[in-house]
Structure formats: C-alpha cells, structure tokens
Image (tube, rainbow, N blue to C red; front, side):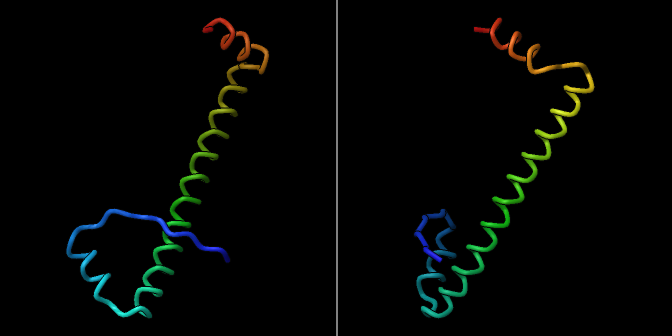
Length: 77
C-alpha cells in the first residue's frame, strides 16, 4: 500500500512524547492512527450517504420529481 505523510495538530506534550519514542513504536502509532482516520472518514461518508438517501426518499414521498426539482433550481438562478 502506498503511503503519504500528513500533518495533524496535537498538543506539545503529545508531540514531544511521539518524537522521543522509538521508531518501532512510532510505526505502531502511525498504523493505529491511519486505521482510525480511515474508519472515521468512511463512517462519515456512510452517514452522509444515508442522510442523502433518506432525504431522497422523503422528497419522492412528498411528490418531488426530478423535473420539479430542476424547475425550482432554474427559478433560483
């Protein structure tokens, strides 16, 4: 897997502790953080997709068609 470096803000004590730990421990920390970030981002994306799906279903149930939506959007321009 290709990796990239990112920068995250942490408090000074955390940054100092990370810098002073062994390279092996830093690799472990990096792996755990990578997984946590990935899971969090995917969960947020899934939540957004679920919200959009629910909104779409509600709009359809209330009679909103693609044509009506386009008409509303066209009026706002």
